Length: 275
Image (cartoon, rainbow, N blue to C red; front, side):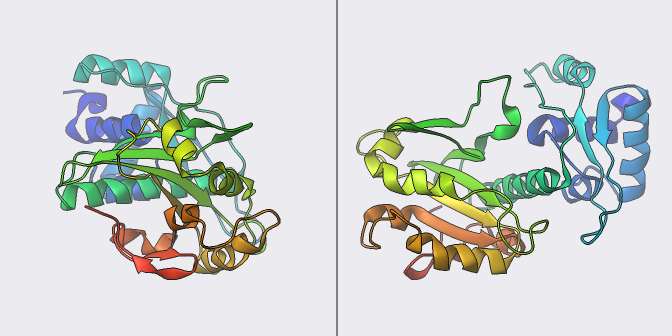
C-alpha cells in the first residue's frame, strides 16, 4: 500500500474533502491519527501534490497561526476515484491572517455541529459555506428584498421528530482588531430587517415549517457580549419585540463543545437547540 492511499492518508483526504481547510490540530481532533503520524502523512501528500498548504509567519501580537491544508484538484480527483462519490472543489487561495482565523473558526463550528448531530441522533449534517464559492457563484447567497447577503454557512438537518431544521451561520472574529469584529455586522442587520417569512422563503422552507435560526459564533466571549449589547442599538434596528430577534443565537468559540446547549439571546434567557 502506498503512503498516499494508507488508512491515515485516506482519512486526512476524506476530512479535507468534507471540511475543505484543516490544521494539524483539527485533523487530530477528527481522529485522523496522532499528531506525529498526521504530520508524516501530510508530508507524503504534499510531495505527491495531493494537497497544498498555506504557512504563516509569526505575527506581531497574536502569535503564529497554524498551517492550513486543502485538497488540490489532483487530490480531489484521486479521492473521488477512490470513494466513488463526487468531491466538490476547494477555494484554495492564500488568505490574510484575519481571514485564516475566521476560516478556522468556521471549520471548528462545522465540526462541533457534526458531533452534536451525531450524538443527538439527528440526520447527518448537510452544509454549504462561503469556502465553496466558485467564481461569482456562492452556495450561501440569500436575496433579501433589495439586499443580497452571503452567509458564512447554511446548515441543514432533520431532527429526531422529523422536522427539517435550517441554521444560517455567521462567524465573527476580533483577534486581529483590538477586540472589535474584523468583519462588518451589516450582514446581521440584513437578516433582522428582512423579516421572518422572506428569510425562510429564501432558504426553501415550507410555509408551515420550522423557522430558520441564525447562529452567531464569536472568537471570544468579549466579542459575543459586545454584539449582544450593541446590535439592538444600531441605527434602523427594529424594537426587541420584533420576532426576528428571537431567531438570533450567540456563542463564543470556547462554548462550541456543547453545541446544542446554552446559546445566548438578545433580551432573553439562554436556550438549547431542538434535537
